[in-house]
Amino acid sequence: MKKTTCGLLIQLSWCITGLCANPRWQVFGSPIPARTDVDVRWEAPTNLLSSEVWVYRLLPNRFSPEVILHLSALCSLTEHDKRQQTSDMVTFQSADGQRRLSVMFPSGRIDYKTVNSAESPTNMVKDVPSELEALGLTKRLLPRIGIGLSDVTKPASSEPDLHVSADEVTYFSNQTAVTIIKWRSVGFRRVVDNMVISGGNGGYLHFGEGGKLCEIGISWHILQRIKSFRTYSVERTIRLFHEGKAFQGLVPGDFGRIDWRTVKSVTVTKAVPCYCAGKSDVLYPFLALSAVVEADRGKVEIEIDCPMIDEAQSLTE
Image 1 (cartoon, helix red, strand yellow):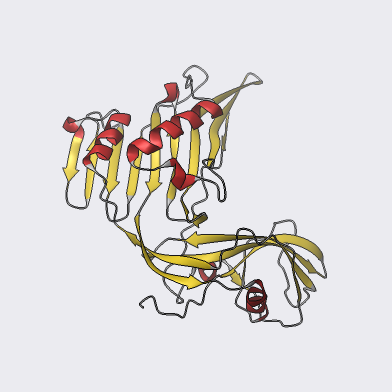
Image 2: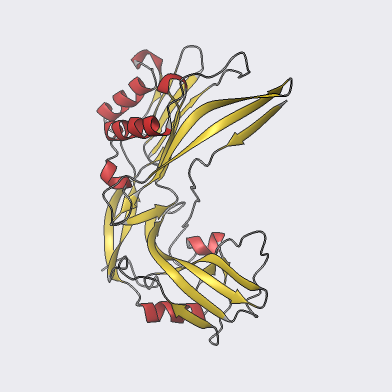
């Protein structure tokens, strides 16, 4: 009997699909009905909020030959393993078909997969790095493939924001549990102007037996500034909520659906400016609010997303 528990790799939700027509929160959130009588209280610090933000264009990333050479070496692949090279991509595959590396320039994608051998209590994966070792490997590896540690820092911090998880498999044999860690994963999200990109730019690395890379999944565009915009004030953000221009995130399963007709108050406890990427070529800012919603059925903490800028403005000067 086998039981598998997979750790969280990284939350990569594909977000924005276009200016105004389909922003992130209209795709993955639920619109909050307009209600001017809801008591909205702002108790969040404002030290992370800026009076001006940039909108960016996502451009292809034509990884340099040096980066591709480093990638192939990290994946134990050589020039003899190259299977395809065009103006848009390059792929490698080992002779036995067990390892494949793809680098796609238009989408800025790096993908590496390996075929895992069957695990069992008699065929265990050995010497998987510890959390500390996986973090050290990641910090050394990312700059070699063109990703600076300063681009994955925590907002308003100098420390890389790296998240470690693991894939564990537990076997039960003769009433004895045997747990195997198949790989250790380190996930990260890109930060631009001290704002995290939610979806689209970031990735993860899997380290397996002996600390070897067994999987890579990274999206990393070249960014080009388009235009700067004034951001909404706290007072204007509250008005957006009253006007029905805010969007509800996920609600804890044990609470159930929020009936906004019964909501008495919304208390904003945290406000985090973020960028959103995904299916469009434009990187737009939005405000992620942690809020306590008080309704007839009680209180619940959720995320509420809302615009930071007037998205009806033209991107051209």
